[in-house]
Image (cartoon, rainbow, N blue to C red; front, side, top):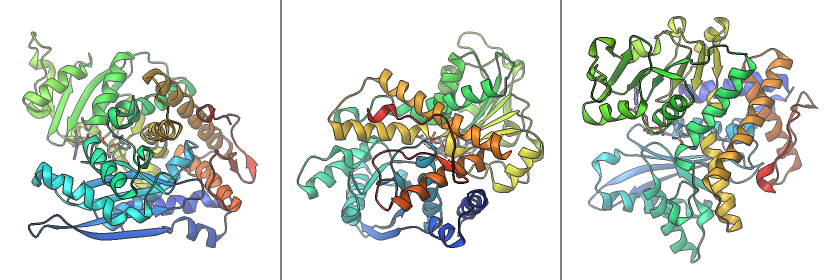
Length: 442
Ligand code: NAD
C-alpha cells in the first residue's frame, strides 16, 4: 500500500472518531467500491497497465482525473481516488471519488499512439463510465486533447452525444470557461479567506512557489495581481530566489523558464539586468525560504519529518495532493504554521469540473465571470464551514475538513440513494456551518 493511501486512511480514522463512526463503517469508507484494471494494447507489441478506482458513490457519480505517468501504480490511484471522494464532499458537490491512470511515459509515444491509448482506456472501462456513473477528467500528463479523444470514443460506442461523460474538454466540445485557472483561483479564494480569519496584517505578503506548471504559474499570476510578492519559484530543475524581496513578475519568470530554465539562477526584468539581487535555489532552499506563504504546487511528500522543522513560512498552501506528510503536518501544527490542506486548497479544479458537467447536462454555456463567481461562493462557504469545525473541536484544518466531508458522505450512505442535492453538513450528530446554500443548482 502506498504511503499516501496510508496517510489518508489514517486521517479518515482520526476524523471518524469525532463523528463516533463505528469501526465497520470506517472500514467501508476506506475500501474502494470497485477496482478496474486492464492491459491496453496499442499495436506494435506495446501494452500498458491501466486502472480506474471508484470510491463511494453515495453522493453522486464517481469523479476524478486520469493520470499518464511511468510511476502510476494501483496504490497511488487508490489514494487519489479516496481523496477525491473526500474533496468533493468538502466543497459539497454531488460526486463520489474516482481516479484513473495508465503506467506509461507519454513523452515516448507519438500523437497517434497517445490517441490510440486514450481511446483504448475508454473501451476497456466503458461499461463502468458515463455522465451518471463515473465522470473522468485530466490529471498529470493528460490534457483537453486527450479528453476530446476519450469523449469521441465514448460517444462512438454509446451511439449518441454525451458531453457530460468527461470534463476538462476543449471549449468547442463543451468545456467550461475558467477550467484552466480553476485550481489556482480556488486556492486563492481559500487563502484570501484564511488571511482574513487570522487577521493577517501584512498587506504585501511574500510568497515562495514550488512547482511552476499549471497551478503554480496561475496562482503566481493571481497573487501578483493581488499585491503579493513572489520572492522564490522553482520547478523540477531548480529555481530562483529574489534576495531583496522586491517581488518577481510571474510572466517574466515564465519567459525565463521557457528560455533558459528557472534554475539558471538569474532573473532579469526584461531590459534591466540586476543579477546580483537573485540567487540560484534548489528545492531544499526554496522550501526553507523565510516567507509569509509557501505554495506547494508540484508533487506529493514535499514536507516530511526531514524538513518540517526548517520550514519558515507562516502559511502553507498545499495545492499538490499529499504534499505534506501526516508526520510533518503534526510538526507544522506544533510550530503554529497554518496548513491550508489539499482537499480544500485544490478543490477549485473539481468544483469547476462540476460546473462543466452541470452546463453540459442543462445544455447551458456560462460566462467565465459566472463560473468564477460561483467558484468563489463554493470555496468561501467550504472554508467557513471547515473553519467552524476547526474552532469547535480545536483541531487543525485538515482534520476539520475530513470531519465535514465524512459527515456528509455517511449521511448520504444512510439515505441509501445517490443524491442530486448537497446534504446538510453534520459533525457529532449536529449541524455544522451556517452556510448551507447551493447557488449552482438554482
Ligand atoms: P504541472 O505538471 O502543470 O506542473 C507541475 C510542476 O511541478 C512543474 O513545473 C514541474 O516542473 C514541477 N515539479 C515536478 N517535480 C518537482 C520537484 N521535485 N520539485 C519542484 N518542482 C517540481 O501540474 P499541475 O497541474 O500544475 O499540478 C500541480 C500539482 O497540483 C499536482 O500535484 C496535481 O496533482 C495538483 N493538482 C492540480 C490540479 C489542476 O487542476 N491542475 C487540481 C488538483 C490538484
